[in-house]
Length: 201
Image (cartoon, rainbow, N blue to C red; front, side):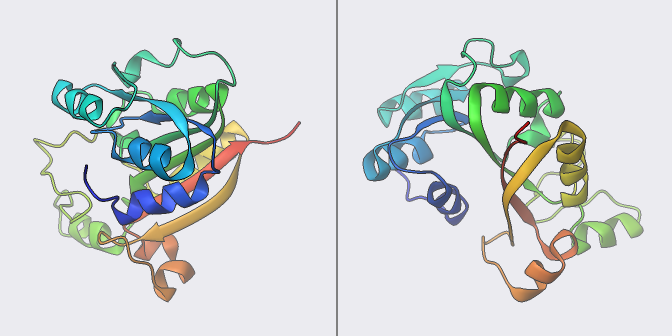
């Protein structure tokens, strides 16, 4: 099993021991396997890529092969403590609907995505080109990303949906943080990490 990359370690630190976790776009199941082995977490992963599904099974992770654009209708309301989606939001057709579903089946959502508001993305757009960066490595014609957003875009959607942001962290492509990123997150952060839930009514 691969060692937990720093982005996933931040996510793991946000998850309480003995929780129930659903990992959307779980890849080879590295996060769920780590949480199972180190934090006694139980859960499921959803993944569309058959090779990654096979790798998750090899890691003894409960995984279901499915397309996230079909929604989460197979899961009951409140079935999980956390629903995680790392580097997948920008690749689904209806991200707003999926966020709603995350907070239907889970008490909290945890999400990461590349920040299209990063200064280097802005610079390349000023030059008339679609950005290619370490956190957005594909060119416009072969990228899986169809709904790129900035931190401000995501936070505006959370406000519209009446989601409460519990924690936010921004890091660079090597998953390091710095004072400039903390002071100007939408300009300096390359990757955004959020923990959020529905507002209490």
